[in-house]
Image (cartoon, rainbow over all chains, first blue to last red; front, side):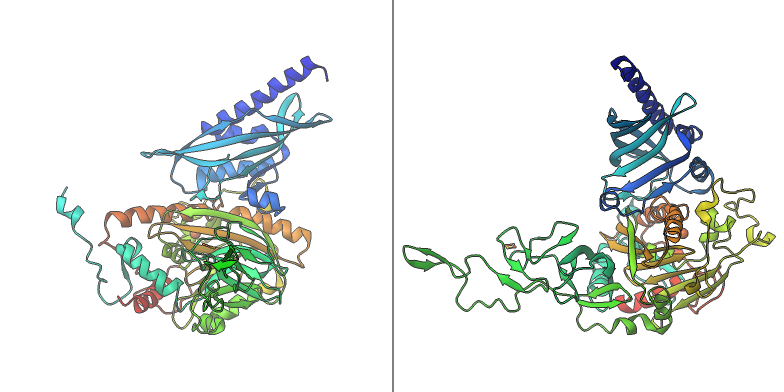
Amino acid sequence: MNQALEAQAYTELLQLYAEYTAAIDAGDWDRWPEFFTEDCIYKLQPRENHERGLPLATLHFHSKGMLQDRVYGIRETLFHDPYYQRHVVSLPRVLSVDGGRWFLEANYAVFRTKLGELSTVFNVGRYLDEVVRVEGALKFASRSCIYDSEMIPNAIIYPI
Amino acid sequence: MNDTAITLPSSLSWPGDGVHRVPYWVYTDPDTYRRELERFYYAGHWCYIGLEAEIPNPGDFRRSAVGERSVIMVRAQDGSVRVLENVCAHRGAQFCRERQGNRKEFVCPYHQWAYDLEGKLRGIPYRRGIRQDGQLSGGMPADFQMEGRGLTSLKVAVRGGVVFASFDHSVESLEDYLGPTILSYFDRVFDGRKLKVLGYNRQRIPGNWKLMQENIKDPYHPGLLHSWFVTFGLWRADSKTSLKMDAHKRHAAMIGVRSVGKPAGDVVSGVTSYKADMSLRDPRQLDIVPEEWWKGPTAVMLTLFPSLIIQQQVNSLSMRHIQPRGPGVFDFVWTHFAFEDDNDEMIQRRLLQANLFGPSGYVSADDGEVIEFSQMGFQEKPDQQCLLEMGGHGSEEATNIASETLIRGMYQYWRRVMGV
Ligand code: FES
Ligand SMILES: [Fe+2]
């Protein structure tokens, strides 16, 4: 790939990252599944499980349908204390490119603010991503949120 | 607002002579909490440590906790499982900092006292002093004995691959401790099949540790709080239920048979969590396949007092370890597992159904949330009381979900041991 093309594609990737973060920080849950392919993987997993090859994840979804089910859960079935979340995400680092598939990694920190409370560090980790182009648009074929945080402060309801 | 109401100390007395009222101070008072640790976690009881499958080979170890105390579960050279307190006999350093690994011996980094895998003290640097100008000086006194100076070693019981330990070497056998009824449900899961660890989840819940025991002794809430349970019939008013206990009423089993089909009107009338039109876009998350060893019930939730919950809810299995960290907070550590002889499909199924459980799970995340809300209420008014009259005032075994009998049973036991 020539340099100009590469720079253009990277800019597009940055846009995907920025839009994803903006959507989940705004609580725009309907947009969240739209960043993924139909048979995507979404995973929220403790670092220990990831590093030791243990398959259990805190959340593990195998399709866009499961992400939509999660959105329904957030809105209708999961009783929870409402909170704001705010992500700070690093520039993605390109691990490899393989036939139109981008493998990327980015650090994230999520702050939680409950009504009437101080803001606290909620979850810290990195994304391990696989991005593909579907009908012109970049989508996550896979997004794993591998978190360092040893303790979840009670519950994680919204997507990371 | 009345100023004196804030400063008046709690009277710390038990209201009346029953267990259908539980005062809020049992969840908030620091002295009560300290006595609970001493009487339930550090004496007379068995606490959960881990699974044998986590330490298959000699020298394998993994850290765990009993109450607030750090312990190490280790497989000794002879293949037996030992549980050692993670406190150096010299000056108390919590020497083992790794989560798990393999060791020939444990060496404290501070002054390098060395212990074997059974916790026996094997080496003290400069024990006989240091030679200076041809003379030995310093060192331990000549009559110092290494014997009996090792790490605190707990009494250990292993059953069906599950490891329990007690600081109290006079504690009754694990089998007597659980009693025949609870033991039979324990053995239903752990019947000798080899276990396979699928992974861990950890959450810190800002509530008193007993609230988690009570949550799983409370069949009244699942069909109300958890939409997935009521809508998909996993646990609701028309589910065949039985509530069992050991003779002391400290442990319990909530046994349920899943309801299939639409619920009758009175089961869900007024239940806002029931979503008649709810269906999953991807039903693989509830691809339930009955297993022979269930022997009927589709869910058995065991509360082993004080430290463990064993979950079998359809195809998902987990050990949930309660690790108190003060009157108003505990860590809740989940170990999901499968069986060695499960095929890949069954393992995938167990993993997908794990989306229901844990700190983000469809029927568990909200349990942590409501526990936090209860604790908030308790902290404000230690003398007020919980009202526990569902199913009456007694603590007999029952066969319906509208009953708080298991919680009352636990408080009968609690009052006896705590002397209140
Ligand atoms: S404190 Fe452990 S060797 Fe001194
Ligand atoms: Fe629950």
